[in-house]
Amino acid sequence: MRTFCMNPYGIVVNENTKGIVTVNGHSYEDKDRQTENTNFALLVAKHFSEPFKDSNGYGESIARLSNLLGGGVIVQRFGDLIRGRRSNVKRIEEGLVRPTLAATPGDLSLVLPKRILDGIIEMIYALDKIAPGTANDDTLLYGVEVKFYNMEVDIDENLETLYDGLYVIGDGSGVTHSLSHASASGVYVARHIVENM
Image 1: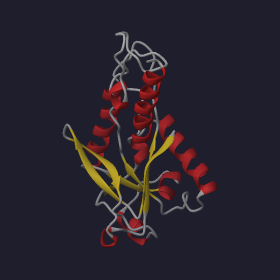
Image 2 (image 1 turned 45 degrees about the vertical axis):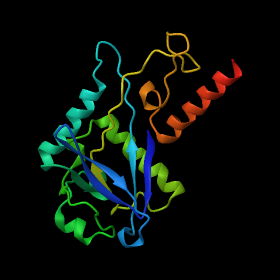
Image 3 (image 1 turned 180 degrees about the horizontal axis):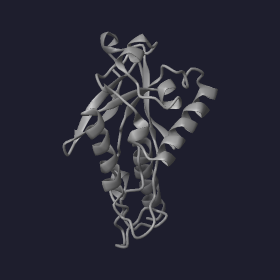
């Protein structure tokens, strides 16, 4: 479980991947486009054992279920999730947090598998210890965001493939999942090449 895509003064936006509507976040430098909210993603990495090999298909099926139940993206108050009830328009409108994306009030527990949902709830409570207010009843949860990653390429500890001198860096390797990791992999390989010249 990790945070991802932290957006101070941000907004939640729709994304369309192969006809599936998911969410993402943005923040703008232009003060006129900023909000009072900070939005971020909580990503749960799932690694499956044999014989299952279609992790992207698994994530896609969760996103499709969200679309089926909500006609697109679902939004739920954290307090409603904890109390085991579906969010509704009235409770969201009366809440302290102003939504930045029009989404269907719903129940994410009908969409997300238990282990994933338990991890998200645990993470929100952990974040509340370092950023008080994160676990507020009015915190809005949008679902779902899914990241589709490439299959991992066979590489060694220096990101070199089975083909001598061919390195794979960035998201092409299937092992980096952020801009900072992708950038660092390029620097790492460049240093390795220079040291071995």
